[in-house]
Length: 139
Image 1 (cartoon, rainbow, N blue to C red):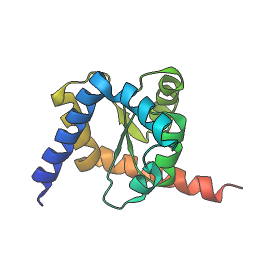
Image 2 (image 1 turned 30 degrees about the horizontal axis):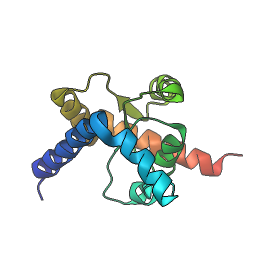
Image 3 (image 1 turned 90 degrees about the horizontal axis):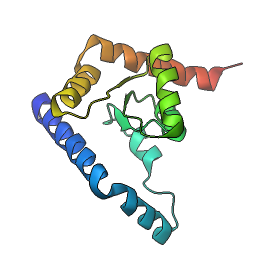
């Protein structure tokens, strides 16, 4: 697959996810977790996969830590509570991802391209890796 096809498929998935989330995801997830009595998807295993170039997240603390531990840069869209604090403290200070405030197709595309194709995106990836190493090798 060439880069444009991969980008197109990724953007389709992001847009689809965003639309679904606005309509039904919150209620559906509540029902799935209650019925299955599980903690949800195997997010840790997904993030550890080498094909994952970035993580679109609400920026909850657990997701943030899992992303850092797997050296995966973040694209953040906080919604509630600690998510806003996490974004406001970690993105400007440590620069381990990007945030977008407006859910528009062109903004999403621009942010994904910046993460995957720009020098700034490469710098973000390096900072996430550096932070991950500091977790493991801190005195």
